[in-house]
Image (cartoon, rainbow, N blue to C red; front, side, top):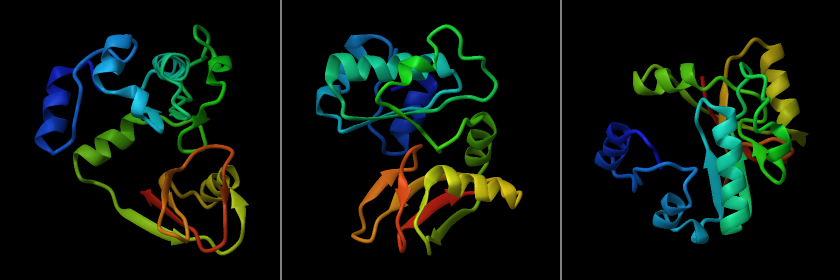
Length: 167
């Protein structure tokens, strides 16, 4: 879903089903069949929009899994992180996604897979990358059965799971 018609059309041209509309309007979520969603990901540069959209997906459509991007550059007044509720912070940390979007759009990134050798939390994994001065954006966790889940806060990485990230 995107309010920007050009971005919606670009996504469609790449084979994605994209709904042009405002994610904060129930009609847009209805058009996207949000009642059938298992996972909702709010991925904008605006923390407040992400939190409000997640709350709408939760309250009106009972989406069980919600992930939101929390920007480090916002004071998060307004909607406030108290709306996070049952949602998880995508990437397990506050993230400025604008430079990552630019990297992806310009194909200036590397996709990396790393196997977890010892159980840890997603938050500690991110902190360990920062301590090594690695600038990474963790996207997906691949479990030992081949199932994928978003890389979010308050998750556990088990031994032999794989983290897929970009750098």
